[in-house]
Structures are given as C-alpha cells and as structure tokens.
Image 1 (cartoon, rainbow, N blue to C red):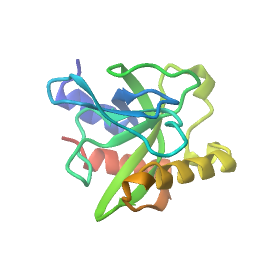
Image 2: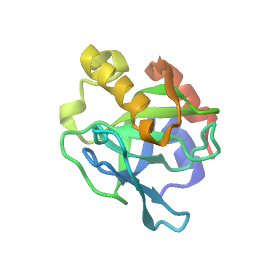
Image 3: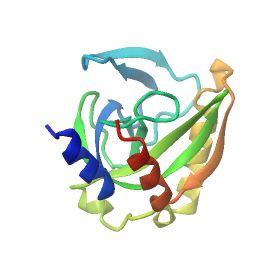
Image 4: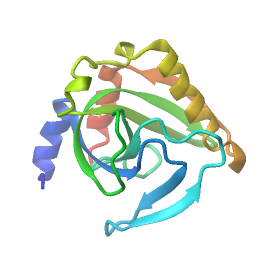
Length: 166
C-alpha cells in the first residue's frame, strides 16, 4: 500500500492507482463504499456498456467531492474491486447536471499493448467520438443532462490529478 507521500510522487510522475468498480462492457453500475465493499447501484438505461473498466483514483479528490473517476482502457474486462497501477493519457471534462466532473483516461502500466498510448491524440478519432457518445448518453434515461465540455490532453489531466491529491 502506498503512503500519501508515495502517492503524491506517483501522481507527479503521471501514474495513479485505480480501483475498478465497473468492468468493461457492463451495464451494471457498482459503487465502492468507504469500507471497500462493492454495492450494486443501478443498471444503465442506455444500450451501451462501459467502454473500459471504470473506477476511481485512490487518494484523489474531484470537483464533485468524490475521488477522481478513471476509465481504464484495456482489451479484457477485470472485475469490481481490482486495484491497478495506471498511466494517465488524458481525460474528459463533463458537465453532469449542475456538477462539473472529470473522467481521467488511463491505461494499465503493465499492459504492453498500450505502451504506444501516451496522450488522447494516440487514440483513434472514431474511438474518441465513441467515448463522447458514451459519456453524454449513459445517464440519458435518468434524465440527467450530460455534456462533454472538453477533451483533456495528458498535461491538463495530470494537472488536475496533482491538484486533486487527497
């Protein structure tokens, strides 16, 4: 387990520890409680499952008061509760109702299939459009308006991560 000082250095180096709450492809939304239990929250109303493993960055604080969210891009889904060391490649700044949220886009540090991914620009434009579509549609049936304010390059995403150290 990392100390806060270790985690601060980790974030400055562009890396973070993510706890997966929702596996890639799932339409079930889970939330981790403060004591680490995974609870079923709801089923997504839209037709698409999560485009990557989805969770939160340990030791971070987002604009919404919760830990920063992270979407882990990988080929195979893991499972809720998995801890993973990741590299930040960018993010998405969203407006969710009245709340500003950041979703970091990360890749597992040990996934050699992702070694070439260093910034959002390394992803296919069509895939970035799919992420835009997912983030704007996944809460549609809850009637919560979601819009993508901007895509964040790696440098901007890292600034938010370092600023949001818990």
